[in-house]
Length: 433
Image (cartoon, rainbow, N blue to C red; front, top):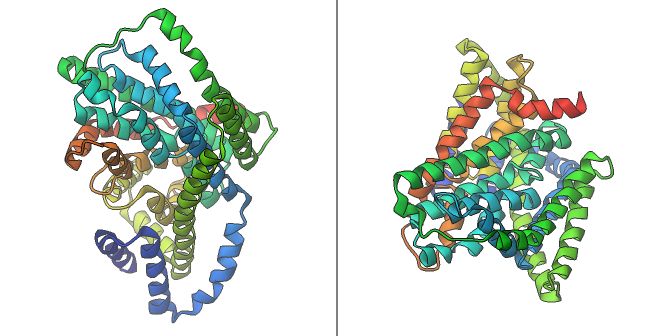
């Protein structure tokens, strides 16, 4: 019963537009006062100190800063124009460039919101200029941005690794194949939609091979940055945190090469990093204390008992978990959803006893479900980011409707991962086993 009331309380508070960090904090202190007479509050100092000095957590603000520099230095806009020259021949034109550039930017930023905002600002003027269907175009930006937390380096995978003590390098390797599959299936959705309704695909942009090859230098910078960050991890030169610092330094060098490195750009990137980091850490610390309360109250143990009493097979249990996260994604922001549910759901997955249902595999599955939450109304964060880009205004429902077709590839990939876990585990097993 406490678990039921916890869920109800979270939904009510979020529906009242109370900030997520405050919801988690109030809930934690309320449960402590109600069930433990406030005794657990005395442990909050030790909990926060032990968790906040975790070396891996330092990588989160560094990856955020990396994305901020890429945005402020104008590198992202050049990257978008270069990818567009290679993909506009497909039905759907620049919408394929939206997905391709989001995938490429995701391999350097690690943030879905940053990916949607950065690529969206570069792409939005093309809607009117080339007469695209605005709803589907904005939906492709919102969906493409979700790749930011799946394709490594990913802040979401880092936080999952910290919560479950799972290897970050293995999680990064596991995200490659599902990330590429998801990007390709997004492009299939666009292709089918624009073949079915050719007017949605806008005016066909003609590009010569000379222009395409001339644009390759604009793609070289992000590729070098990706190799520096991810390559340094797998070469054993740097830890994920050190690799994030390497990425920031490389991004500054790229900004200098782009002749956009100046104090104003650095200042704007630093302020943007601090704002985003403060928001994330406030939620993280509030969630950590709430998780401590859950553990002390025995909520996790009770949930495990309920699942065991149902007598379901491991696959049936996983399908219920998928449905649970899709439903929860309609009401909770993805970061808070991960931080509040992983400590409860992860032990359930471990208890299933399936050799293929590993922590690495579940990390990728849960990240895909988090991505679905990013484009699921009414709380889908990427929908609001995409709506905010629309300088001409318009209904929020247009963006939400345009993003709905992209939920199908996410659900398909989630079910495919349950049926064939090796899609996620093959690459890390090849390297580490």
